[in-house]
Image (cartoon, rainbow, N blue to C red; front, side, top):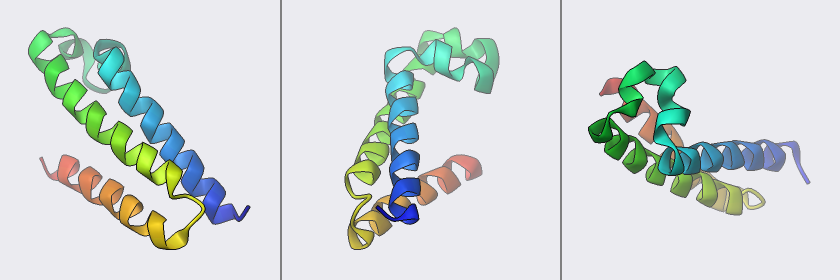
Length: 88
C-alpha cells in the first residue's frame, strides 16, 4: 500500500467519522467548534446536513483510496466543500 493511499484512507476515515458524529450527536461534535449554539435545535439541523455531506465525502474517499483515478474527484469534492464552508 502506498503512502498516498494510506493518507487518503486516513483522511476519508476521519471525515466519515466526524460527519457521522455530526449526524448522531451534533451538539457534542460541534461544541468545540461553535460553542453552546451547537445545542440549539435549528443549528443541529444544519450540523446534521453538514454531517451527511462530510460522511458521504469521507466514505467515498475511503472507498476510492487505492485508485488514484477514483480518489481525485473525492479529494476535490472535499477541498471544494471546505472552501465553500470557509467562504460562507
